Image 1: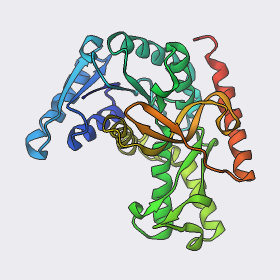
Image 2: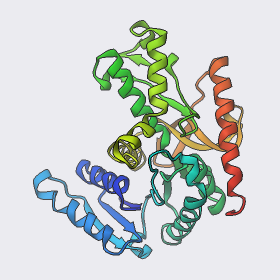
Image 3: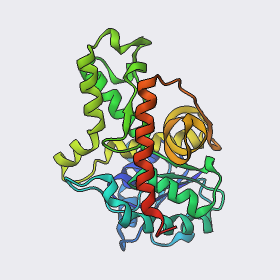
Image 4: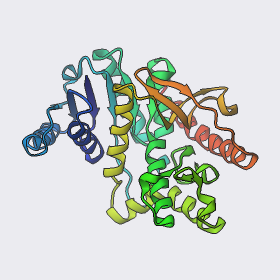
Length: 310
């Protein structure tokens, strides 16, 4: 099974490294527009094979899409990353043209590929990819919810002082600092509601920390984070390639689900070999429904900026 990752920057290279190390795919192609960059990253990863014991083939390519032919899954990380003080929304004008061009080039060589969109603003870029390519909605997946949920579980584990692998929780809504919705009501620690262990004020702080989790790291690092984003992409790719049917919050096209239509936004999905195999209807309470409606409105406003591109 072959995976292509377009964009060999920090997130793309980390994703390739995790996929290779865990043996998720038989081949990974890293593609970038910068001369020699993807080739260098691929060579560096491959030189870990004998010490870490993986057999995945990792190759790099400078803008040669022919090397991506026959990919089952294509990950798009292309575009500029956030800088300190920059919102994901500010990237629309720059990244929209890049993502559209990448998607068209990819499908020319891998017409049956499932596309995973990572480029920001992710919900809008997923929507653009669907509209520009005409693909069925199960084959375009925005990755953000997997990452946001991993950050949510991290902050829950810190507040609980318990292992994060024993914590369950999900984030829905838009992949933005003001649009994501950490579902604290449904979060649990080994099956028991976290509300049994944390106060309302502690849960509110966890939710607030989650929502600015990416911005916090951008401020600390001077650029966007990459370890957790790269690993989250690999986690999603694994569920597709190995038909694991995991429930993962992803940004997908809604046609009536959750009361929304013609929008890509984060909701829990069953992810398997066909991409999005089911949108799971989590019964939201009135307060959560109101937050989701506001989130959807904000995402729609961002989508308006795509008219010039589409």
